[in-house]
Length: 607
Image (cartoon, rainbow, N blue to C red):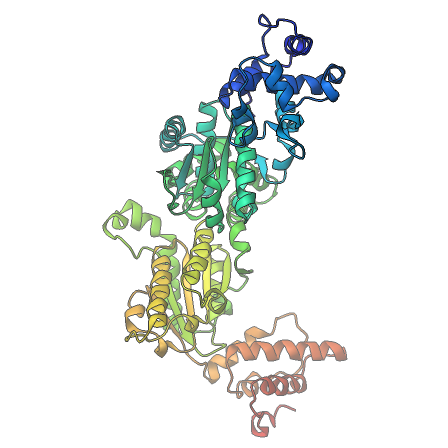
C-alpha cells in the first residue's frame, strides 16, 4: 500500500507549546511536516493550526496541562493566548469542527469549553497510517496485481484526470468488477494514493449515518492520501446519498450509469477474448503451446478473472491427470462462483446412451451441440458475428409432458460439452413489483456469462403466455419482462433452455425468436421398454424382470425412473433381489402421487 511519509518529530511544537503557555516568543519554531500537510489539506488558518498543534502536544506531554488554568485547554484560553485569534475557528462549519479534527465539550459555555484533538487525527499526526476506529467495520484495503492493457491504461488516465479536475467521484460503468478494479488501482498508483474498497451494502441506510461515514473517510483520505472504490450492488440509493458527501478521490463501480449530478462517467469494458488469451498464455507458460486448440476453447468459454489464473493453473497442474482436462474443469469451477449463489447446480452425468428419444429430436440436440462447439469459427473466423446484430446466443424451447426427458436432455447437453448445468425456477424469479423481474434476470445472466453454463428455465409458463392484447399495465410490463428475458437469451454465450408443458400458451412472436424448438413426445411401448432397461443399472441384482410387462404402464420416463428406484429400496430392505413384486408395490405408490388408480389389468401378470 502507498502512503505519505510520516514526520513524527514533535520536539519543535512541544517547545513551541511550552513557550506559548509560558508567554515566551515562539516565532522561530516550526511544526512537523505532517502537521503542515493537515493544515494545508483542510485550509486551516494560522490560528487554527496553532490550536491543533497545542491540542496534539497536550496529548503527547500531559505535564503541560499543569501550566493551564484548570488543567485543560479551553476555547477562551486559545483566543486569549494565541496569535491572530478568531471566533470562526470554533463554529460548527469551521474546518476544525466540520472534519472533527478537534472535539469541543459544549456542556458549559463556549469560552470555558474544553478542546481535545480527535484520536484518529492524533495518531495520523504521529505517523500512523492505519484506519480510524470508526472506519474499520466498513473499509478494507484493496491491493493486487494490475493487468495492464491499452484500454485499461487509457481509462485509468481519464480517471486520474477526473480526480485532478476537482471531480472526486467518478462512475466506472460496465465491463466487470475486476476490470473496474484494475482501472481504479492503476489510477491510484499513478497518483501515489493508497487504495481501499467499500461494499455498498455496508453503507448506512440513514442520512446521518451516511454523512458521518463519508466525513470520516474524507478526513482519513485527505490526511493519508487515499482513494476509495465503492463496489455497488443493489444498494444504489445509499450509494447516491453517500457519494454526495465525498470530497476525496472515489470511484463507484456499477453495471449501468449512476444517475447523479456532477459525476463523471467512464465506460469500462471486460477483457476481449484476445486479451484473455494473453493472460492465459502468460499464466500457463511454456505449456500453452502444447494445448493446441484447447486453450482457445477455454478462453472462449470461461471468463476467469485474471487475478485467479495463477491459482487455476496451479490446481490443474497438481491434479495428476490430463492437464488439458484439469485446466478446463478448474476454469469452469473458478468462473461459476457467482452463479452458484443464484441458481441450483445439477451435476451432469447423463450421456446420449441414457436418452430415449426419436431420431428427429436427437438430431436437433446434436445440432445444438455442434453450434456451441463451432461458434467461434462461424462467428469470429468466418465473420458471421460481424453481420448479425443480435441472436448469436443459443436459445431453445423444450416442450412436452412432465417426465418426457426435457431436463435429462439438458443434462446430456451439459455433459457432452463439459459445462455446468443450472436449473432456474422462473416462478421464483418473477416478481409482482415492476422492474424487479428484469433486475433478477440481469443479475442471473451477468453471473452466468462468466462460465457460459447451460441454463434450464423450468416452468417458463410463469412468465410467458399469449399476450396479443394489452388489457392493463400488468400485461404491458409482463411483455417487457418477456422481451428482456429473450434479449438476454439471444445474446447469452452459453445455452439457455426454456421448458414448458404447454407450448400453446406461448405467443408465436416469442417462439420465432428462439433458435431451437424441441418437442418431447410421450413415450410409446417400445420407448418405455428402453427407458425401463436404462433405469436399472447393470450391477443391480434383479430376478425374472419382464420389461415388456413393465412397459404396459402408460407413464413417462420420469415416473418410470421413480418406480425403478423405489423398487430397488424395497428389495434392499428385504435383502433380496429386485423382483416384479417390488415394481408392482412401487408402481402403486407412484400412481397414488398422480391421483390415478393402478388398474389390475396393467399389473396382473407381474407376479
